[in-house]
Image 1: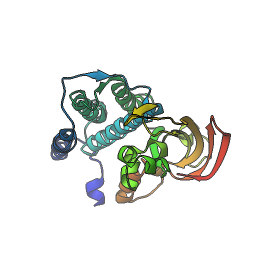
Image 2: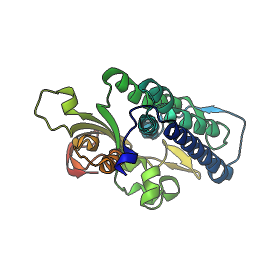
Image 3: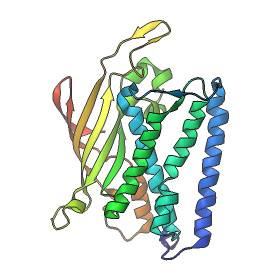
Length: 280
């Protein structure tokens, strides 16, 4: 297993072809599935654009940044495993998230329920840029984008919109989501004795949201006490924990998308500063 997971030192054509075929197949099947199982439930329309930049206090936009960054990271790492050069990793691998999410955005453009959003596209580009920019500047990911989630009472009030059950709420309830920029301290202070795995994380979340913004739902105006939340916390970069097992490294790399629970300081417009002994 360790031999299989070890990145190739030179171009391994069979691995590269397997990566390309696998990614293309998964992307195609996912888009077909979305078209048949999701968009088919809503009326189609002529292609249109919408301006939804001010909805959900931009939590949905951070979801696009996160998805684009993580898919790009996976794409680049897969090509690295197959021995593809760094330049092609960034051109053809790191842009995987931007390409896939752009296709989904086009689907939105032909749906009566939604529309093509330029602010979503900007967020997709920011996610890809966060990955590519760091590789060009530092040849490593010193700042990673992470995600954490806790259940809230808001989903129970509108389960059709915010999800019903833990897995649905993870995707739909923006009130419980937090997106983090997790900066590795040792990579910025290489001569220090700071542990190589220790990160300082800056988070953004929001709550009090039952709809994208104050709006009429079934002829009833839903008003909300919507507020932004900013967090400061510690984190662990699992990819920098030393181990000789490539299987364990792979597991750490997969889990590294999740912010490790730690005490956190919250800053918001309601109570000012709030301390969380453990924040998810």
